[in-house]
Image (cartoon, rainbow, N blue to C red):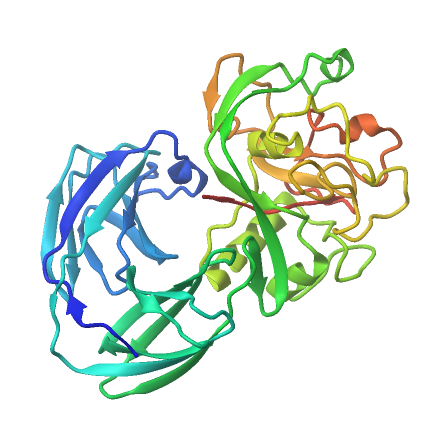
Length: 407
């Protein structure tokens, strides 16, 4: 039996700093009452019942951390919880559109209050169990019991080669809860039995774009320029009709089959899908930026972008299943061909200077579309450096999308 025998009383700030390589505040913006963009604090504190005081617009608990949006020039925050003493922390004024990272430690003291029991069954033997971010042991023989203090807790289960799984519980005195935990192979996301695999992409520096005259002769200027990207994850396949149907309750695709990529969706439709998916999953999915898309399509830029993977789908009258459309060196399927893919950015000319985690122009008329589609008659449209764009309210049977996520 795993017993939680320690509990924290005093919180301590270990680190607080702006991270200019993170674009979370820009990609997921919030505004104050005057329409000014907020700054965002990512607080690494596994404490679902925490409350906050200060010049705060909103605070949301997501996937083991708090997202706290504060107005410009805010310079203090107080963290409160029923289990800890209040902690007030002061800092230099918050800046608009900047992401800050805050790390808080929870020292331990003995706990002698009322408890409850959670009986667990897991498909993986020896999975490690974390309670509120702290390792408490491992499950033996696929079964175990955990004794925890009364109140809300977040349990997390980890094992090499598998995705982490989280479980939120609210336990009453002497209550016994029964839960079955299923760990999925690493990189796999599952919603109500529908799986979607994410590939982890190691960041780096690459030259985005091409000097190819054919490409530069069009309006889709792709001037070569240096780009630095952080680590991120991107979908191994395009989003399927099955996953769209599960989240949205409908299927807009012209030719319908669960394993085909969803298509005939606008950029705005994709945003609504992602919003609902994140609400159900507690995750932070988004569309890939144009730079992330190209970096992944070119195999972390190991390729020049002119050669497309064998088996890429084009010169056809309809798309194919997401698993059957050309695989690149990173194991990513259908990123060249099958259906073209929406990206997050507004379309515009490339910068000439080096950029870090670029997110495209601040405004525009069209959104970026990449990758080419089954209906294209030449492989040029499928090249990883070829750019296209579309009104965000337009839909096409030849355009779908894949998911991305910050690591």
